[in-house]
Each structure stands twice: as C-alpha cells, then as structure tokens.
Amino acid sequence: MRIQFVTICTGAALLSACGEQTDTSPDSITRAPGESQSVVAEQTSVTGARPASFAQCVACHRVEPGKNGIGPSLAGVYGAKAGHVGDYAYSSALRESGLIWDAATLDRYLENPRKVVPNTKMTYSGMRSAEDRARIVAYLQTL
Image 1 (cartoon, one colour):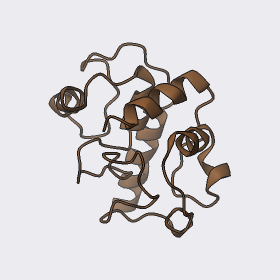
Image 2 (cartoon, one colour):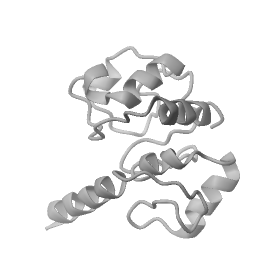
Image 3 (cartoon, helix red, strand yellow):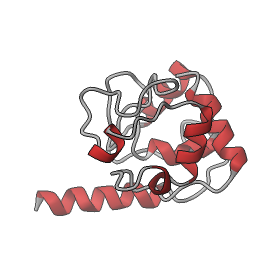
C-alpha cells in the first residue's frame, strides 16, 4: 500500500511539473505534495526571485541546505561534484559520473538528463528552452 501511495504522489508531482509557469508569486508557484505555501514563500525570500521555469524543479527539489525532497537539495549545487549531498541516495550512475555542476554541464543535464547520465534516477525528461535553462542555471548559482 505504501509503495502505491509513493508512486501516486511521485506521479502527481511529475505531472504538476510538466506545465510552464509564468506567475512566480507564492500563491502560483507549483508546490510539491505536502509542501505548504509558507515553505514556498520562505524558499523564495531566502534565495531571492527565482525564474518561473524553476517551478518544474520545485516539484522534486528544495533549495534549503539539508532539506531533500524527492530529489536532493539544490543548495550549493553550482560548482559541486555530482552526488555531493551526503544524505541523498543518488543513482550509482550519477555518483560515478565525475560531473562538476558548472554552467555548461547543468545546461546539458537540464536539457536531457538521461542523455548526459544514462541510468540516472531523475525521471524529468528535460527542458527544451535554452532561455529557461539559462535562467535556471543563473538562479542555481545564487543558492
């Protein structure tokens, strides 16, 4: 029963991440299952304005250090080695990839995660818009 619930929640989070978001007010930002509006508002105020396209990332990731969601926290990701969050269970493919999350690598990964790291656990299919990817990479540099 627990596995079915997690699967349903994960599916709902992924479906909520599929659409583009243009309004970045705390009321309109896509929240992960169980995430309150106050958590989203806190994330936004702590890190500054985030791009609307980051709403897709929020379905699985948090931006506070030490707070993982379905995916690992993105705090400090820019410039870090792939698999750097010690308490997150990354796929062996990502941990062993040797990637460093710089602008070029993040851009390629956001465009097509499975092409960059085959067998990654990340189920996101990728972001086509180069402009949206650039905005997200710039935002990740501030975390």
